[in-house]
Structure formats: structure tokens, C-alpha cells
Amino acid sequence: MAVIASLECSRCHHHVSAETPQTLCPLCAGSLYVRYDMDQLKKTAKRDEIASRAAASPASLGMWRYASVLPEVTPVTLGEGWTPMLQSKRYPGLYIKEEGANPTGTFKARGLGMAVTMAKHYGLQHLAVPSAGNAAGALAAYAAAAGITAHIFMPQDVPLANYLEGIVYGADVTMVDGLISDCARMVAENMKAQKEANTPISQAWFDISSLKEPFRVEGKKTMGYELVEQLGWQYPDAVFYPTGGGVGLIGMWKAFEEMEQLGWVAKRDGQYKRPKMYALQSSGCAPIAKAYAEHKPASEFFQNAATFAAGLRVPKPYADTIILDIVRESGGAAIAHPDARILASILDWAKNEGIFLSPEGAAATAAYDALIASGELKPSDKVVLFNTGAGLKYTDMTAEAMHLKRPLEKKAALPTRTPVGGIITPQ
Image (cartoon, rainbow, N blue to C red; front, side, top):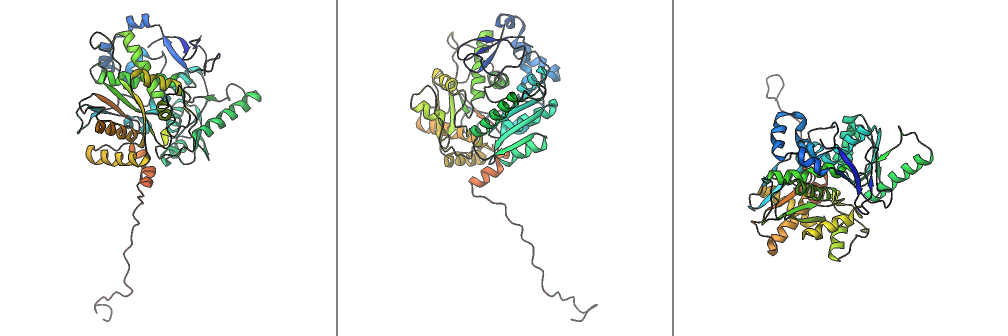
């Protein structure tokens, strides 16, 4: 495993120590990235040993097959990572990265698995998160596995599965009449009150929100390592990623940077050519797509956010500038489609590919289909598209969008008089 050299601010590049738990940059409140001694990693992290090590040791299964480029720590693991790469039946160049195969059914298991692992390493006892649903479920599961208390704040209209997860795993669950931004405000207010009350460290909450601590990115970056390894250590032409908070997109970009420094990824014509990164959203909550279309460096708070793609209902991502920079630098785009198009894509891919997409994943397939139809992409272009969660986690939301209700069981009507036939009773 890799020894952390420091934590680096993504904005001002100030470095802070990783010896104690950190949230944001103390100078500018920028998100912190984990940095390693890459010269040392070049000597110790061997790409060709990954597969054999994973086959030989249960501790190297899942995303922990990349332990040589992850923090030196004892994992809290439920088997997250190394999800299937499914080739489309209709588009020869398209691969679906099926993140629904993760514990708790979504890609959130990667980031929260790593974040909870580090929280246990630091001795933290209380973790708090505002969530659109799936991060809450993942935190609840990993916190239970680690013996840590999870404090979860979710909008009250999240998929039922997310609420159920929190309760079943024994988390402290607060349902909020509002959006994830309202949940974040409530977490901040609770933490401020604890600080003013001089709450003992053993009882104080630690905010584990997206990009407000450095280790969820480290877990999510394994998606970048995986997709490259599963494609024979080559970059695809494009990556389609449903984007709410954007941690996965940022994590993959970090993985690409590390792999290039380590020489793990193949060059094209003598140079590294990273994939175009597409950030996909719903028109009902599209702060990134709107900022991209308007050529703005940051997003604005998206008013009246409403979409059945619950994971995309993030009105103002904390790392919006980083997401937009990555999309533009890569030559990709940020695209949004209405819920009706997203629902149609769910039904299309289920019937024609046998894949029950999450609404977030279907935001990506809807965008992919549109770009194929417009000619901007060719069916032969090698594209990795992330289905970030299992469609079955959204049964109530998808059924409601389809106006589908459970059929009522009809009980057979009993006859008012049953003639027996004269054997023991008169006819």
C-alpha cells in the first residue's frame, strides 16, 4: 500500500498533513487531494502484479486490487469494486460499467468504503452526511461494518430503498422536507452547535460530504483504474458519467493522472490521449450542463430542482469548477435530457439489452443515443458508460414515473348457496 505524502488543495495547491483527519483546505476551503510519493510508487507499484495478487489474496479483491496506489490502511470492506464491464448488444464500441453490482447496489460503496476505512483509522466515532439517497445507504452499511455511528440527512422523497437501508443498518436517520442542499445546511448547523458546546471529540460529528474530505475521491478513482485495466490498459475514446456531486468523474481524472505518471496506461502515437469526459444530468436539475452551455467557470444554484433521478438532484455541486474544468479540458461536454427521455431510455435498454438502468444511468444512455443519432459519436467509438446504480433500488420512483401501480389481488367471490347434491343434505 502507498504511504500518503500529503494532502494538496485543488485550488491553491497548499499542502497539509494527513496525520490527522482533514476536511477542506485551511487557507481557501478548496477540496483536498491525497498525494503520494510517485517516484517511490514507480519502484513499488507494479501493474503486472495486480491480477496475480488479487487472485492469491482475498484482501486484494474488489477495488483493493489497487492497494499499491491507495492509502496504507486496513480496509473496511464489503466486497466493493471490480464491477462488470458489459458490452452493448447494439453498439459495438459501447461498454456499460455496471456499478449496481457493488454492495448497497451503487457506486457510492467505493467512496464511502474508503472514507469509512480512513475514519476508523483515525479513530472517528461519528460520521455525518447529507445525501440524495445512495451515499446515505452506503455510509450506513460501512459505518455498521466499522462500528461507527452514521448520522444521515436525506430528502423525504428519496427512493424507499435508501430510507430502508438507513434504518436496517442502524443509522441515525433524519428525513428532510427539502433538497440535499437543505440537508447539508442541517449537518453544518449541527456541527456548529457541537463546536460551540465544546462537544468531546469522541462524540463530535465528522462531515463526510462529497469533496469536503479527501478520501471519497480515492475510493471513486478506482473506477478509472478498473475501466482502463478491463480495456487492456488502454483509454477509451469517451467516458459517460451521470453527474450529481461529480466525485466519480473527479476521481477518474485523478486516476488517469496517476496512471500516466506510473506508465500504466498505453500511449497513442507517442502520447497519452485521455478520454473525452461527458457529464450527464436531468433537465430538471442541470447546474453543470447549464454552466457548460453558458461557458461559465462555475454553476449557479439550480432553482426548483425536480427529477426522479434522485442522485442527480444536486442543485449546486461543491466541486462544480473542477467538474467543468475536466469536461472542457477533455473535449467532452455536459448534457441534460428531460425525465421523459430518461424514462424512455430505461425501458429501451431493459427490453433490448436486458439491463435495468438506474435513472442516473439512463441519463447517460439517453445522451449517448442522442449523440449517436446526431453523428457526433459513431457506434464504433469506444465508450465506457457508467450505470451508477441498480435499477431495482428505484422501483418505487420508476414505477411512479411509469404511472404503474401494483395490481390488486382479486379474491374469488363465494357463491351465496352451494348445493351439495342430496347425499347428506336435501337437494
